[in-house]
Length: 260
Ligand code: NDP
Ligand code: 8X3
Image 1: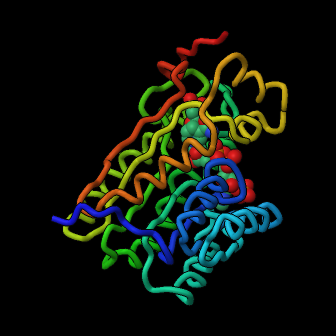
Image 2: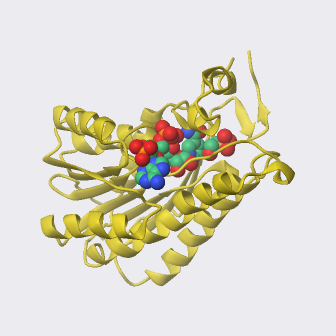
């Protein structure tokens, strides 16, 4: 049995939501491993900056392209641009997503619910449908679906987000069954609190509320998650980490956080 690490040099890695947070840090991490990167997000200025950082880190090539995972035509266009460049993808990081609001169900907003399910759930499905066909013959291929501890333990004000991330976990399980017999591995990577723009987006630009989330504790960083993604992708081809929950030491559960 080959126990060698999966080599990412010159291999194609596709990352959604690469303009910020986990996606940007993952781009730099996979870039430093010498991968070729296909990056998608809506904010092109930020995506260009991510691309610059990846090139500096040592990426073999970088292609930043507009992608709105909530739109099937946009995912199709992104995927077709990928197919023009390669027929073989090593890693897909389904990362685009996030939360909107902390309303209880009785005060929930249609547009928040719809966006959360469009991005975290349907977006992941659309991108998977388009990209995974390019992975079916790739030794050691890996799909990383970014879930959350919110998909495992519900909390007040998190109904739609918790529901969307619970859906991500079940989709990951179904995909793993459907892909059994191919070389494609599927990991649900489920982080706890990480200090990115996540809370700024959730609180719709309110910086004070966003900062308060991380007050008095050392949250995970985007780099912690990126390092974990790279570790997952570099495991020998016969190893699949089905699920990986990673939290700050001070966060025992979504609602149980020790603050200094
Ligand atoms: P950020 O807000 O920093 O990044 C979110 C990324 O998703 C951005 O690049 C954004 O790009 C992209 N995105 C959002 N909507 C779309 C869309 N419709 N089409 C394409 N891209 C989109 O947050 P994080 O890095 O923290 O979040 C990344 C993932 O990690 C999310 O799925 C989130 O739910 C999950 N997560 C985060 C945790 C945390 O505590 N930070 C913990 C657990 C999971 P743009 O706006 O430019 O399109
Ligand atoms: C983000 C982590 O605990 O804020 O997915 O829901 S949490």
